[in-house]
Image (cartoon, rainbow, N blue to C red):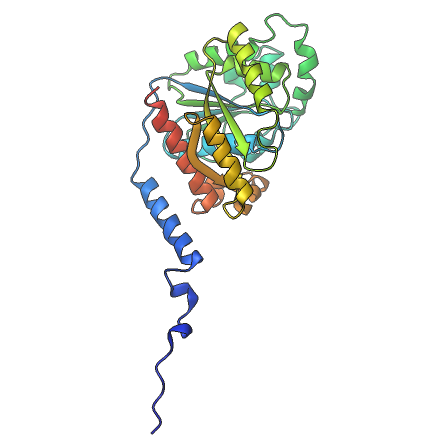
Length: 306
């Protein structure tokens, strides 16, 4: 009777080989997921107010605002997102109503409506709230010009709201438009910290020096407590030399501010807003979701030492 040959090593399916790139990636995701599960985030001593800003468009400002907020809320933090971009993309991604007739941030800064009257609860998490933006915000820049204390209006409304809340908010994130107009100036004046997302692509640092100069002007003349505390690298593709070079350049220039976490270029991150969700809810176990959860944890731990 003919003996069957033993299967050669080459016949072993690649997916069972722990040395393949796919197996290494799965092992890495599993390790990171476990590390997050056993990590408990410290609550800040007082409410931390961030403006998420970059004058360059398409760098992931809204995506970062939404996903960091959702990640922190998922960890039990009480989080408020203020959508100050007339496009209202943060409102869409958080699943809150922002049709033209909806009471919004426009009514707060132009019509002097109390912020408590326009805050909505996001269906994402019980501790996540949003002040939505509507199309009316597109004309707010012109209307603000003639108003008294035009640069302070958002800060006044936000401070009053935070003081009136029985349950303290841990974090506030302000998503602003990609231009330095009166809306963005209101965001800088209302915030205590600036978070700058920088994409790991060509021209990543273009315009950054101007943004930093503008922040210094705001700090000097309107908000002495403002500081750039956090820089987050987004749209990172580890397969390209360019992404690695940009990440290294940013770390060399801003060693203290740049988070260790890198946000990868991800289909899941891009898909989530079309379902009215953050990637944290849309696909919790994806690499993009894990990266934002890690970035949120890093921000929380850093804040505990501020």
